[in-house]
Structure formats: C-alpha cells, structure tokens
Image: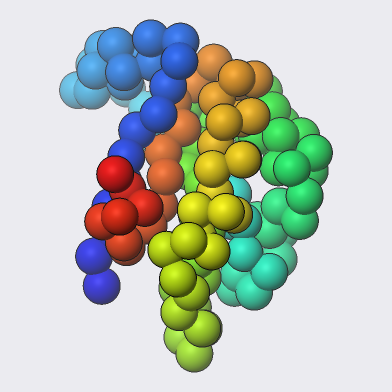
Length: 116
C-alpha cells in the first residue's frame, strides 16, 4: 500500500520542519487524527469537526511537531471508500485545523486524487 502525504500549512511551517531536519536532538512527534468511524484505535477518531479541532489543539499543546489527518481506515478488513467520501471527511477538518494550529498538518491518503 502506498500513502501520499501532502503538507498543508498557513503559518510558514514548512520552514520550521526544514529547520528541524537534522538539527534536533530529539525525535519529532506526529499527532494522528482519524476522520474515520472504524479506525483501529478509537482514541484517534475525531467524531466531529469540533472534537477534531479540540484534539488537534491538545496535540499541539502537548508538543506534537506535526498533525496527520487520515480519512480512510487502513486496518485489515476495512472497507475501501471513494475519493469523494474521503475528501468529504478530510477537507472540512483540514481547513479548520490549519486555521487554528501553528504546526504543520499533513493529509494521509492512498489516493492521488485526494492528495492533489
């Protein structure tokens, strides 16, 4: 399985990640949000736009360096969804979270049309 990661950021975050690459004495931490009803880990499921924003802000405050948002479960036996369904799950979260956090946000998808 291939995953496309596309970085979204409205606060100059790419410069932050570039500046950290190879210059930090600690691992970088990625917070994971799943906009799926059937994620393998229930604690990462967002459930609603408000909950997703709350979770993203908590992750940022706890020290996450980047937040990754997924819209399709990749657990064994999960149902494959259309690109349109995945985008309807992801894009509202992506827009609101990017407005509220000051760290990079990535989109986790295996569909090129969603990553575009």
